Length: 67
Image (cartoon, rainbow, N blue to C red):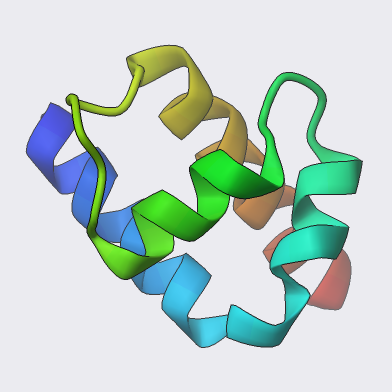
């Protein structure tokens, strides 16, 4: 499941590449640096599950608001 979560979050980040700074500002506990590393797929250690869940929830809220 964690790999699916990682892939989903990376896909969402790539779709919003120009918005990474705004996303970092909107999601407490998630830095721009983390988002940039994750979005580019260049991270030194496995991304934390907690941060991935925070980002997934953020994207889910945005999709609900758009619907």
